[in-house]
Length: 249
Image (tube, rainbow, N blue to C red; front, side, top):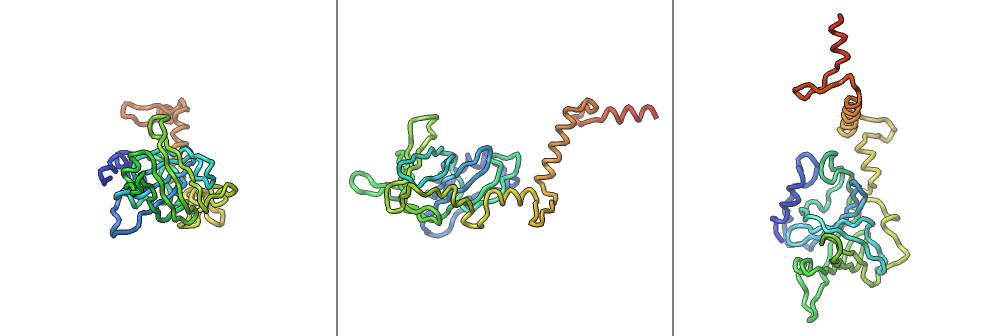
């Protein structure tokens, strides 16, 4: 994989406005990282990303990862993301692709453990092409072996995320519900949302770009349903009530 695989990522975004990373290369021969980001977009989901050859192949997991080997989680493959996305959290601004709050739910390094029948390690890029990925996660919340298996259902993007049987498997635990906070900031999705809405610890509200956008949308909605306003040939709203009142004076 190469930086060319980020073309789809960049084509969907205006990173100067959305607040997302533009894509920087990671220096040094470091161990590959993984990240799982909790993302409250149109639907709440978890983005599972693995560093592979300078980019991060990504899967959207609607229900999040499980520690139970008997549970198979749907994982929908999305476009590759840049490496600096691994630690991104905050808000993707309204009106942009994937708009909503994001936190780094888990983060760490991983080992590729996928071997062929002869015991030879299969490179990650090839494992993804083959449709079966096996990794050992060294995260702050998740540890142990996980498999990603490509299915033949849907439009070809559907995979399954499965916890493999090892000492870290635990059918009784549910980290998605018991550990909702970011491993970087300690914040939850709700914390990020409150910050973006400008709610201070004292309960006092302050004006933010988000509240301004809400006010603009409310005004536009009011004008659209008010017969006193019409669109002029220049595309601007005109208050007929005010205009008529002016003529009578």
